Image (tube, rainbow, N blue to C red; front, side, top):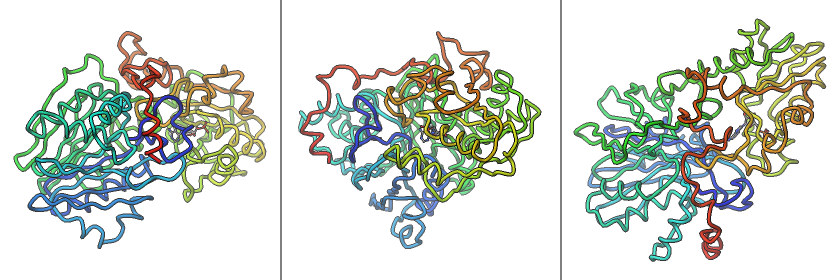
Length: 493
Ligand code: AMP
């Protein structure tokens, strides 16, 4: 994924801005490998809507590729495109959109020819030392073709002195820092890898016909009828070939893995199973905990759709107050979050949500959403609900305040743009225009996730966006002398 060099991922107003969330899929051992990969990507469309790509591996080690901007259906809906991706193995990637246009060369999977044959890689996550590595690699003569930090993997593999593909990959993984779930394909095998702390998700499934599937989430397995086998473990590499699945563990098992807590709150699809629990159930439990912590007298509980729906259901059932769809979402517009300017973003919110007046008028309304980032959505929604005749509007958020930027793969603006980094809850309530505002506590969130509460000495998740506890070094953020060479920035445009 593209790298957030030093400040905001959102502030880089050009093609080089980073894109962090993403979906990956890999299939081995099916004559329909490319079609299954396209279906898997379709189920993972929520993880990235900017671009999609598939690389397939045909007989005699021939690779085929198709990539394009836009949705999976736009690029792979045509049978002729799939037919041009022959082979028993394939790899796919969905790219996340923020602002601006994407150069096609940044669309994954990335592909390179090595002395050992072709190699394709697709990456979900964000490397935190990519610029330091890139600088060193460029000095050694490596010629970067894209501006994605994922290309670092390709060059590290290319210059590795080890002989086997696996040893070269391990050599590369030992040099990168950050969060990664990656799927790679070469002549002999499909490979899946998760970073040592397991920040980003990756699951393994089995097809009834005997082949295997790797996907960012279980919904990517369900769509192709693959049975869930297990999560790829933090720090594990799985190697899939005609002999089956082998596990390689180049890293020590972490005493405390740090899966991204925001996947539970917002990012994963609600029908996905994470750590053995449906995300949907978890979100309902978070909503119930929120109601216990900060219930308020109300006539109706209204979710901000779609992300607030399961939490609002949990809240309503715990509070014993009716749940109603008081806001209707138009599904034919993209996420408001991706709009480039405040003016357009405001317009985007109006395009996306409208008040269902009959459910709101004359009522005390509790609105439930998953997060407040800049506060743009909340401000607009509160105003809209008031205009529709609500007598009181209370906002309840199923995450703690987002006070810190994410450098591990969730697209968040720099701290100065995060509402909660600059205001206390009372000020935030005033800014968004709500009668009251409450966030779930960090302990409440951990309880809803089945933990006693948060143990600061051994947090079970990566919760840096709520705590500033960054478990993986932020090397690129550190020494200004390590900032990217100006030459690279120019060359990247
Ligand atoms: P904001 O309007 O800036 O406060 O953004 C908050 C809204 O954006 C919430 O309704 C979330 O559902 C959604 N959201 C939170 N994080 C992200 C993200 N990383 N990408 C896209 N949307 C997000």
